[in-house]
Image 1 (cartoon, helix red, strand yellow):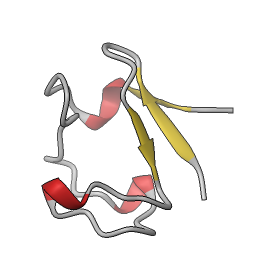
Image 2: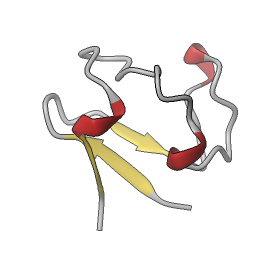
Image 3: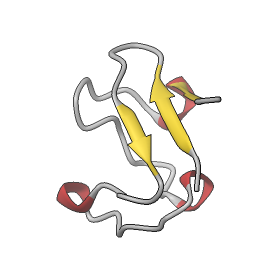
Image 4: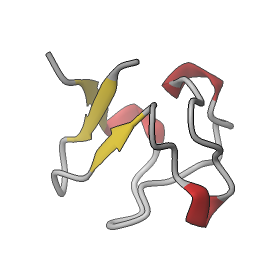
Length: 53
């Protein structure tokens, strides 16, 4: 499982945890999140996230 960080606000999307408040189940890979999903903290799109090494 990978983690992706919002370059705008620093929110970390953890694939293992998902984003249940936005309807994204735990274990959902970042690439499988719908394209219209936005950062739950600042509202930017998926294109503003970078894989955390």
